[in-house]
Structures are given as C-alpha cells and as structure tokens.
Image (tube, rainbow, N blue to C red; front, side, top):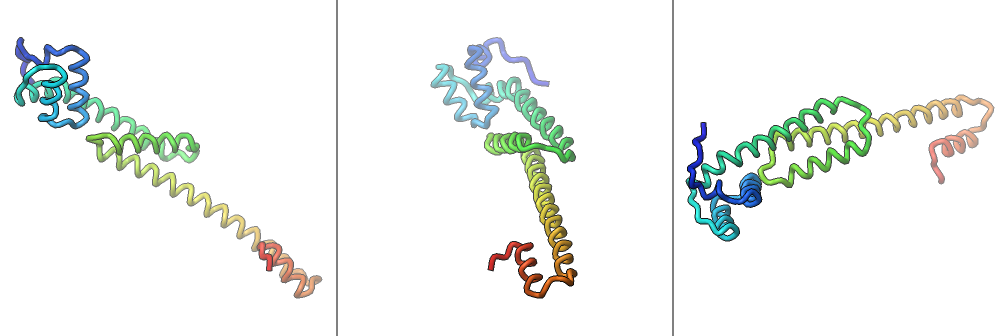
Length: 172
C-alpha cells in the first residue's frame, strides 16, 4: 500500500494542468532528473527525488497500468480477429498505423508490438497464398487449353506452335 501524501506535498499542490503534464512526462519515460528540472523551471517548485518517487507511485503507475491494459486489450482483440479471412485493406492499414504508433511510443510494450507484427505477417502470408492460388489457376487453364491444342489432330505442327505461343503470351 502506498502511503498517504504529506499535507504539505508540493507536487500534490501543483495546479491540475501542471500535475497532468508531470504525469504525462513521467509516463512517457522522462527521467527523474529531467522531471525535477521541469518542475523547477516550469512550476517554480523545488522538489526531491523521494517526493518525486512518491508522486510517481501515486499518480504515474496507475496511468502506465491503464495504458498497458488498453494495449493488451487491443492486441488481444486483434489477435482474436486474425483468424478471419475477410479483412479489408482499411482494417490492415489501421493495424499498420497502430503498430507504427506503438513502435514509436516511448516505453512501448514489446509483447504488443510482437502481436501486431505477427498479425501483419499473417496478413502478408495470406496475400501471398491468394496470389499463388491465382497463378496456379491460370497455369491450370493454360495447361488444359494447351492440351486441347496439342491433342487437336486437324492442326499442322506450325499451327499448333503458333496457337501455343498465343496461349502463353509469347510474342516472338
């Protein structure tokens, strides 16, 4: 359990906007030394490492927990959705943007980044599989058509060669 702040706590006496900015700075990875310097220059308040540490435990730790819980919930929801085959391009672009934001955030959660990356790689693999399927279908159609040309006994060898070139898109 964290202790109750002193009644004369300078950091808890800061204005609401100043407290919010200090919490944001610390939650985004600002060092204690930088935070003390910020408090002294922006708020004209002298503070110590001990009081900043106490402030951090009371105000910043819950914010960080909330951020991690939110990121984990988003990653979990995306992970559940990853089995769906019908993701459209907008969903994938949104996933890429989320991954980009998470990668560029200080103190980013490695597990979240890993999950997002796996989802993007799954999508990439699915696109490659779809392309391979289309190519295989085209080749099968060409093979069937080629078999008809080769098996056609009414055409001369030169006509068969020309038909096969035309079928496979050979210009010379």
